[in-house]
Image 1 (cartoon, rainbow, N blue to C red):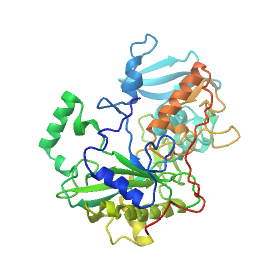
Image 2 (spheres, rainbow, N blue to C red):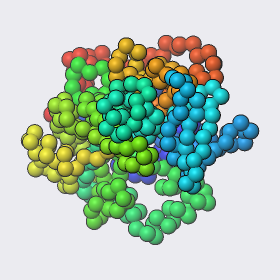
Image 3 (tube, rainbow, N blue to C red):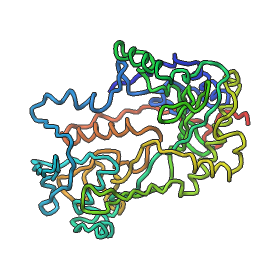
Image 4 (cartoon, one colour):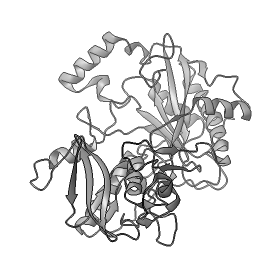
Length: 416
């Protein structure tokens, strides 16, 4: 996978100002949050190589398409896995209204994601007996954890007016977008060669935590997810959310019909600690954004709004404005066999069955405290070696930074 810093924060001075504000608020700098020190403020990495997004398709699938032992079928829907006793023997899929069955010489590897992987297992008769009965599916093998333990990251974005013309809001008109696209098409450079989240932070919400539990993405524009501006003139925003939620949800099929929509219950904000974590997020973010490093640029707070201060106001605003960060995971939890909620073992084999693995983000026991793209790729890399029978690399004693006073201090100092 190609990893870079996009435009390396050259697109706007707001990126650096955000980092400076974090340092002023008492948090450390970090050059590499994926390395020695996660905690702190610094530049953000992105899977961009040569100005292009290095998706798993581009990095892994395309180079493998020339292999004689690889066949890629698109536009298909997997209906279920067929078993011979407790061994997965084939899978049935539908494409262009025709059914196809593919036999497994050794095993079936299910990598359909945190929503579809448990659904395929359930349609195949693997899951909680009560869920399968409700959907009209005959039970083959009971695993009560299939579809449960659903987790996700939520986020809101703080928005501010910008007093200087240094944001990207003046690049949202059609002509500017056209010129950005032309430059990217011919040279793979400029604003089309980045996702614009070029500075970030990971912090601890309170003393007593060894690792960060709040994540920030900084964007030098005030805009909505559909790409339209939120304000006239210039603005900026920081996306923030707790990255270790305690609430758990569920995915369950509603019918044996593979076209039937599942019942998905995320149960966001059901755990009292998640509500408390959001109050910390709002207050700590506001404190960071009001540091002197932002004074040159920071105008009025657009949202949440300076009037949102009490616990009750914060709770109400978060519930009305929170959005998914699109990190669903955990629905085929990896864990020990004796844990009734486990679905796969440490080698991603479905517990109690033979010849069947699940390899995707659904196997995470808990959501990682960061974006889940790279961790999902890491699981796939590891399991590819396991499936091929490759010996693991020797363990390395890589040092990881942890604040010496983490038990008693939330950060080095506070301007509160």
